[in-house]
Length: 210
Image (spheres, helix red, strand yellow):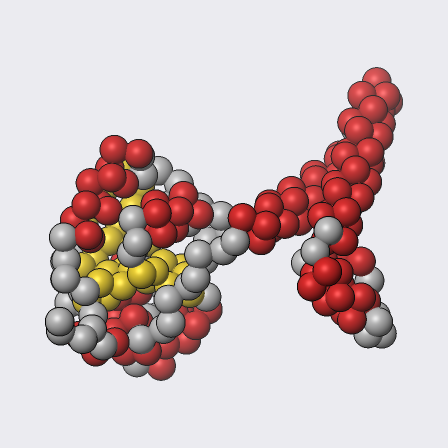
């Protein structure tokens, strides 16, 4: 059996948008595009599985990439979720990207071929749950801040509605924080890490959870 090395891999860059995917099968390939739908994803995964040795490079986009990653992991394909800032620094250093240019699929493939990043492991179900809970809390806190700001300029007739929504957000955030705490305490390893983090000066519950 032929041994697969990092240098023998075909690096495929996939740039994720809300409604479509741009992808390049190699550092010099012409980028292609498909819809970001279940059918199109299935077709793309089938093409990737047909290759002898492939690793997909995807930038972290704040959540848009999760659906793609899930499909790739389920298919047993190697994928690296990379920090877009690292890709941008690589591109600027090699003269491939101006300051205002956006990252693209071929650039992601070039980054993979040049730096050969390690594959991102499939997260455990517990890790995914904790990430989802912490992410939801972050969303609600941002929503609460926006509602507070709206109240400052809203007419008096809307204050009661805004106050009711703010009260609901406060309750949801409190409930989520309790759920996160309970979830962490169920795991001895996580509970120990949580205690160690919070023992550091300036590190509170929210920072430790995140």
